[in-house]
Image: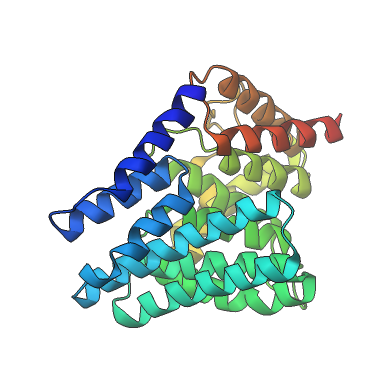
Length: 302
């Protein structure tokens, strides 16, 4: 962990004195700084080179990356004790960066980081404002999967939305859809890191749905049928769990999903995630923060 922090600090100094040959190098370096959780340094790198971005696509690439850095800078400030008003201003700024990217050159990334900053703004502001932001977020996320049906983060956020929001007639929340969307996010993710947030969210949606193994076995046939019948991608993924089938055995359990109740599976997920984290050779700061939340959640269920 200390070696990682030192390497990020050295990289930060190098970035400030680096002369870039082209825009692609700047974006590549910014993306690496994002992976290394050096959000403030990455933001400064892009800001200092803003004049080099000329085409609409380049400017949009600059803007959605600024929105991405802005969101994580705000998250860090929240952990440091920033006021609500400061956080709202930061998320507003992130939304504006991404909104400008959408206007210039729409892309999956531009729509995603717009929706993410809007969501964090609503979460920070409070429940009523979160409800007001939910439909615009969903609209932006639908644009994301129009551009890229395999955009795992979009399916993850769909899962969070449908889990956290109340159902009809107040809003569009739905626990079963949330489970399917979150399972979809895990299955479409292609990165090598341990996506703790995805697994935690799946555990939370399962715990909240709270179906018994017998109830689930009765539902699988219906969900599978709906999955086959739906033509629209988004509507189809509401029943993604049905496409897996009750005999599907996830990596975190020796039993199939049809053999476990929702809450048994939820506990199995969190225990597996904690064990997987303990085997990581060099956990990131984000992973360390996330695993603490996982441990607290599991303890609350005992």
